[in-house]
Image 1 (cartoon, chains in turn green, orange):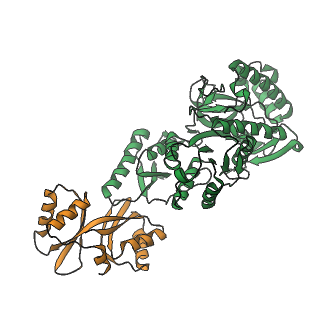
Image 2 (cartoon, helix red, strand yellow):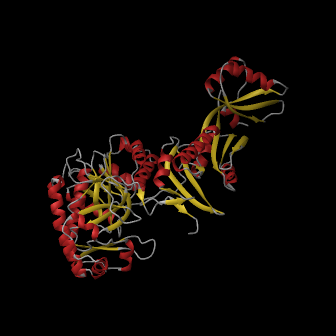
Image 3 (cartoon, chains in turn brown, red):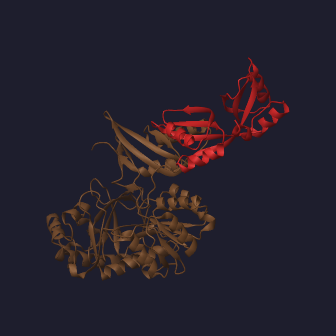
Length: 432
Length: 142
């Protein structure tokens, strides 16, 4: 089901709407956010210079650092008394990034997530269990309001207490699961330990996953345990922009539709800042054109993707962004080679005898980086030659894909750390 | 007749083997024979114990993953060439031997623990040739 008529607007109408909203936003931000007005002045651009969508490229970027420099409310475009909600990022390094919502922003957010939920197959008849951590993190509440808005029954179970989560799924007949891909796998594991087969004994038929990359290999792992017929779609967002709801995958599985009437996407070369032609891979930059509280202009997401504008079979005309291949933040430089953890994940998931959990450890030995990959056996074997074969297979595949020698360590089933929120699988022990 | 072998996967970390042995001791599991194959990264500990099922249960409770598999424990005379005689019969029937190790439970004959690619076929061959094998029940009474 398509939730809103905007999602199928012809391209010219989308662009006309975008330009109107962009001009309005730039004027408003210039008048109300001194920190951004200063940036514009320094770049020699005035609000009246924005006459067409291509003029967007004249505007300066906003980065996470700008948000920290203006902590907590320096980039907000409304008075504090207009805010009805404040969220913040975890802020593992330094000050957290703070985001604020007006009543209008919450309505926009709800609208955006409602669309994404429908794209993933959700409807009013669903019982939606939200296994994202509630709190300062925007993920849980974003999905909560969107799904409630379309009429689904919300089970706000948050993360943790996985056995109880399975009990709720059985007793409430949960049909829709919201979780990170890694927590969805963990829940399946817990169900199996309880003697419950997630594919047969539970009624979960839709999974809306987010906050972590969903590689094809990870999707396949999810199908293995949750069943072939479960609809798995990923959705994308970040608190700085709104939270979840920026884009979401439809059932055609050909990228995530961006809510273009609220967000304008661009792809830039992360090194030079130049806008790249359509279809090229680079860093995603998003401009919020209908936000009141925190209307970020040209926000650098650090996420690496590409955009597609070809019509989608689902009928939506909004452009699509490819499922992320990584965050420029996550990219590891190992012996001079750029490596995304998702590349290592693909290798591990391609080896049948291994489970989907892993750990990547980077150390420095002398002047050389050392890569260790810890992988977990799906089950114990008494065959030594099979263990050697598995180790060799992982090593060889990593060598082919990354061009790097790695140490591969096999671990017993169920021993590596499981995650309820965003998985933290990389341990970089090299002194920076 | 088959016996059960208890296999434990051990990450190659100091003290890991002794943790496993500690769990077995605490549950009064007696080890009759063992084979340890290892690389720098991991080890595979194969055990013949008096009660393999109980051993597996104790290990699971303590967070160790283990596996029970069928093996043949075969009696052979204490004399030169007897193991070769046995293997000849198995080879002639086209069965692969995956691994093998010794077991000493009585002084006048020797025993080998043998894991073949086709455990049932080996068992049949052994029975046809009148070779004595040891069962789980016998192990439990040792």
